[in-house]
Length: 551
Ligand code: ADP
Image (cartoon, rainbow, N blue to C red; front, side, top):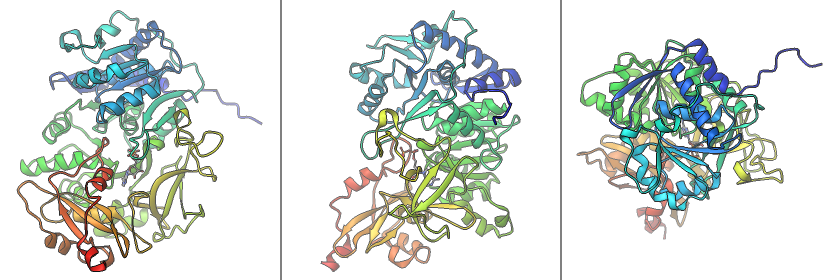
């Protein structure tokens, strides 16, 4: 027997419809890409202008299933283009501008995007890739005519693109499983792979992301997504904020400490989200200027493991709750958060900090388990570590055009129906997961695994260390041994001895790096994570001092 409730497909047009009905006057504030000035609009205006985008797209023969690309910062106009595209059933493809131009061209060609919306800061990239692009018919700069850049590529100003279009347009009316958004993973191994979100997966994920023990936002919140919309849907915030009526603050192109602080204070931000490197910039600024955030209540940090210094600075120095989040593009992206459980609240502060350093537990709609190399589930005892597998309604089943397929149905799933995250983790009896490494970064020393992340986390706390990375270097006796690479803080000169002494007692003796190398800059990838591939290349001929002894 079927239930007798209404059929109300979960499509993202409902989200902006709701914002327009329930919170029409709630503000959306943007730092303009053109001049850094702030401008304010409302959900009602975003709604009307998104409808104009839909009409302008339809006029250009864009239809359900067509892909539309954006190469853009978080702004009101990006939000309008986002909803204007998705709500009519076309697919919004967010492209990461931090990739190499050749990679961007490859991705846009692979997606067969018809129109490219871009911010004027990326005009040079567009000029470079335009001759390579095979399917793009129109380039729209997200600005007005006055700020339209001179260019060799024919460009239309966004304001002209939507000018004169009707503010009425039919949205929705298609199956909730219709494709909605496309985002390519950075492809540190092989070509980038497209994750194709559906309307249903996005709506369910946004509701999951806003559970109290995840982001927990409401109408009184002021939300600043620093995490870009091109990085896995701004971790759902572009859906969550209009869903619950939070004021939205869009930082545009300026993500440095002073600019972020100005927004936090000027807009009375209560919740914000970004990768750890952004927070290191802000915290440095706060310390140097003896400032503190006065309205901020919660900060979500994820994308890579959170350094303990960052966690302690927010929680202990400024009284801001840290929500440590783990996830990935293929998971829409949220997989777990490090919110405490009742058991933790009975523990002392130090134990709570330790618990929060872990990647945490799953919200409803995510299931996870760890398995050994044969795919057999291993104990969730907090000690054994294995491959981390996940499943749920917002987890990828296959990649766009069947890239990376593992079975004849084109799916990228294990035989048990789970998606392999490529991470290695432990899960404790309370269900708290801790990443020990990415499968390809684990250091295999004498048949045992050493976690590069653990060593990096501790090394970050040593005097004079700005950033730290650990990679495995070939060793005649142990296969691989850890090499610690340090980027010193400006003006500081930590030494091998000082750093190793700091690590002493914090990690197992046999985990102690065999050597410490110092570099001016540790390379970061397009999503702000340490680029270990580049480091491994740079240090591929490195001879550890312990090698000689073993030879
Ligand atoms: P890509 O896989 O393209 O680098 P993602 O943003 O999808 O980009 O990265 C997902 C990966 O980032 C995860 O599989 C995990 O290895 C890492 N990651 C994300 N959040 C955390 C976290 N809180 N702690 C440790 N690693 C994390």
